[in-house]
Length: 86
Image 1: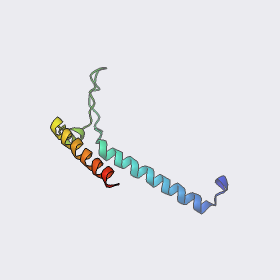
Image 2: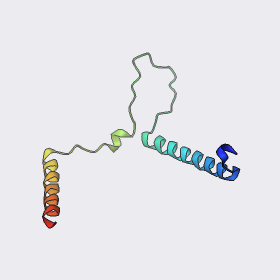
Image 3: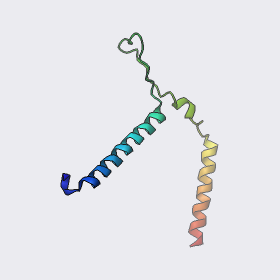
Image 4: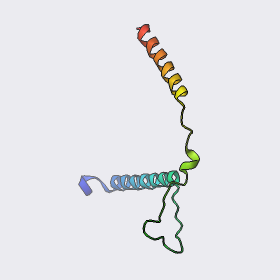
């Protein structure tokens, strides 16, 4: 059969690949939340503005420099502890 693989094995792999592809596309579709509506009047060239609809809801507030300094401080303490324990 195809590439010397028996038909039952070939069909199992084909089915698994097809299901994985469908599952992956569903995950991407749910993550990006595309706007699938078709406008009545198509926009003029240059007027089309696209954005990720779910992105605004998921954005985290940026970390302040003080938070970043504390994270680096704790990392330095842990690294120093690991080095000194050897």
